[in-house]
Length: 351
Image (tube, rainbow, N blue to C red; front, side, top):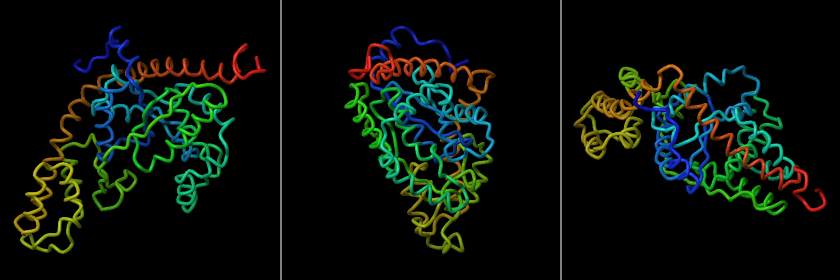
């Protein structure tokens, strides 16, 4: 088995002590698509520089899907397989299921004691999702949904993360976390570092129909897609409506296919010029994109087959869970002492 699951050497373990930490995660909502690919590729790069903790955030999924009976354990295995196929290494990074590390819930509860209600209510995504999902009949007037940015802060703080890779829309969540850190450190003692948001350049790829890429719209290309599935999805892509014949002059800026060429085709300028000059038709243009997409995803399909050996994904999650629990337990020992929950320590007068 080429991927290997051997325990890290003492030297490797020691080297982690001197690396800053990163925490990130995704909700388990099903197989990942290529819209997630650039995020995962960034994670793969980061695990060479930082000590990384990557959580499959099943408790976060419950904040909006609390009334749906979902097999999060099964979904966790799927998302872990996607992560491992792209190159996350369980010998370098802790990959684990959030709910298996109970300290996430304990720290969330502890932080709820000091988090002002107004701080949670002003988070932009809280108001936006409350309105958007409320319009389709989803009742999100729950404590869990109000508190999910605080649960995110607990996730980050539990591992004393120095940085969190995020999109720009998540920066308010990082700032809330920083405020919670400052409040805790001021009220009790210096336990947590203030995390920084690492904003990466993530290309925004539309779905094959031009809408937001989403498995619920059936317009996404899965990371695990086969060659034939890629060809089929690319054939469905919306092209320039003004092109009726293959030698008509094209307008690539309005074409979904071109947006993918910009990410996956090394000679995108040549393709663009040929389109504008009417020297390549949409059928040939799509075929070339499908070829380039298949080249991009082929190594991940091969890696996926290796990780499909029975028990390997579960072993990777178990290994990550053990590392996460150890780090989480150390942090919670400090938190309990700082808050006076351990006898003879904490706030003056509460020994």
